[in-house]
Length: 494
Image (cartoon, rainbow, N blue to C red):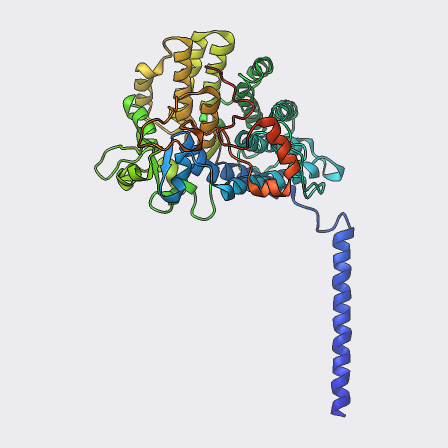
């Protein structure tokens, strides 16, 4: 009898299990087959993630280990210093930067673009906002590597493209500029209620600020073409000047890291790798009595501002007393310090360059130049009296030849872009200012570039092995897969 009861219990358990499994399968079938089931992705959450990813990835390895040292903003300790010696044996880093952008901001934003472009979830305003972020993400990738997957980039999930073709940087720039023009037209005449209220970490769904961001970024792209496609550059610059631009620090595109230990630079004060401000930056700020000195640089143990020289050999570095040099300033290396991807200060300085280069108007260029400096100082909350004193000094006015004035603008741009070190490196590559001298001294490493500042990142061996045909076509067009090979827009002569 007990045996029969036991068998009945087992049979009942099996029946219950089959019912549960059947219900689960029905639920899975519903998930996979029902377009209105819970598989619908929240594009608002994806948009927020994409925006945050854009800012944080721009300040990641590419920012501190590579661009920050190439552009002589800082010097890293330990093995993180190797890019400062102009080496190129960093295959994992090159792949990591590439995959993090495509796997982060681009993947998320491509999903948003698809969701907001079709069916019941079609939304022109959200699509335009997402498109601005997409362009900004692709701009970083192409500025880092040159030719990259663009029309097919980030579409492994949405369109099952696993080996995307590499588009030319010339095409990418032309298309990004066109996309932003369309986005601006959409956003400046739209109802904010159709945007991302509650999910916009940049501007809290203020579409007027999104228009300024898109147009200011478009101005950046247009000026990047100054030596590569001057005709297009002039036309687009003129178009940008006819639309609203960033003018005040309240327009800045910035975010505070709210997860983990906060701002990336915070852990580098005493942790790994230790970061020190460059001698070039400290000398520039102290030599001009720039009130941003205590903002960007901390005093050393002796109460002085002392920077670390870039590019030292291992022997020279060992004798340089690296640990005692000045850390980054608290304003840019605290837990709640901001990340920036576009500022009003940069926009004013771009306008100064354009006025000088395209209008031949030194007076207008000087006005914009002064506004750029003033806006940067306000961005970092410098006292009004110090702002006025600095602008009244020799640094506050453009003087000399056109070349000398361009160098002044370039130097102030380099300072104002802090801590967006990647953009600072890109600006130096295009303009050549401030001048990063060729390394000739015996105590300096010349690296694989023969002492010249690196021009790009290399395509990684992983990408070559998994998408070899397309990568090789890009290399054949662009030149050797070397950090000494300039990208397409890097065509400044003399």
